[in-house]
Length: 274
Image 1: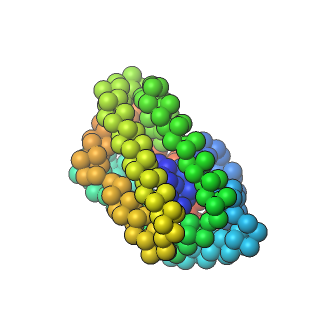
Image 2: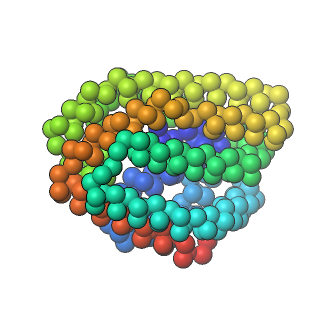
Image 3: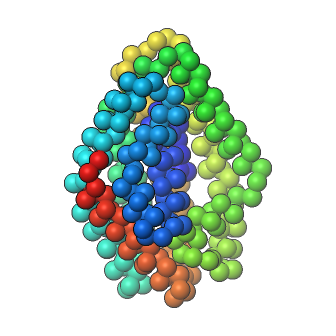
């Protein structure tokens, strides 16, 4: 459920997904380096995806720096959240309703951030030339093809890899939990592909009609607000609860270490001048 299309939902969230993968599978110093250069990494990704011209890229760089600087005030809140998870992990008393509540918190956090990004940066889509639009949709179609190919592949393995970045190697009982939810994972991938296809058609209509910034914002805001479904969040929370219950001491230790690393990266983000 990580990447999505539109100008920033697709591009920015792919960066967040890539960041999560890199940070979770590398050492602390690499994570620190990544955070310190977050502005450059995002700029390169967005610029290449939209095929921006020099002046557009200059403006993008300024906008990214301003956006990252404006988010530093939330660093303390995020670290407090991470610390609270470490404490809960220590008590071993984590119920499913708590997990679902925290998932809803992060979903709202994500949506608020994305809506702010859309409000500020949807003008980049409006300003794309015909050549840039072609490049944009070529990237979009490539990503959709990748997702369609995944429908015919094992749906459990990607989930296993995802959770092992947090817990370490999963035991047989944990793997059985994921396997029993394979149809659920496949249904979410199908739903995501369908949403992308619908969004593509709507974007094509806007480009064809030479829509203004306000119309792009309306479409992308609606797409973002419809991203999460309560029943899906509930099912994910049940899966996470079962996995947490099946952790051994090594996995608890790995999860605690990862939470500590996350906090150190948030500290680096807060101290970095973008």
